[in-house]
Image (tube, rainbow, N blue to C red; front, side):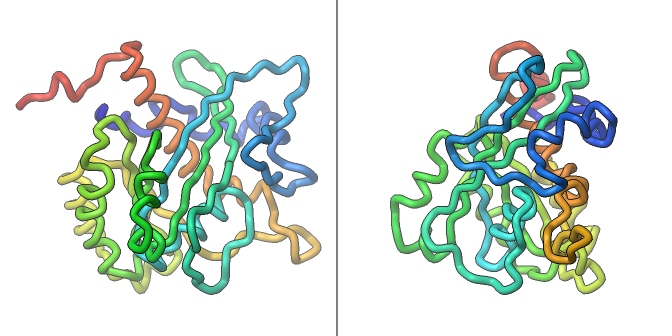
Length: 258
């Protein structure tokens, strides 16, 4: 796998907050609400706007209860479940995200297809894990800041799931960061983990999203601002990996000492 790019070196990080970015985001919003897309649906862009689409399959992995389903719900602009319920079988969710490339200044529509499978189903049915891993472009490994065991389980998951897939992007996400005051994972342990594994590590909050004036409907724009760093991070690492695989940019890992 290519060495991860420096943050912000591939994708313009705050482009979604610019006038151009906000206008482009209207294709995934409807009256400030997030649009929900099925597997065969895609955003409708104005005829004069030509944007290439880059599609990726992402398997979300982690111990039961760390917030895999909640994270995918936040990324898709859906309600976050208030109580934990084990995911039965495989759940797929499509999320579209427009982003601007740093070098070419092109806007690309990223299509992320998230695969979420309950831990019980993975253990019970042998075909579940191979199905989730098949043709996956990225593995998203979750741990909870309030569950020390989920953090200590990361090396085993990385070896078990990503060990035989060197060309797949690997990223780590710490959930329930809003409860950081009660964390079981101190900052020194995160630093040691990053130094050992050389993987990007993102943090997300698990609180319900902000609401529109009616007090019931999720505020789509505010929700996007809360999770833009995750979607930009995925876009950045996946696009970089594709460029390295195509030979368009050198792979720094090949020139690393040792």
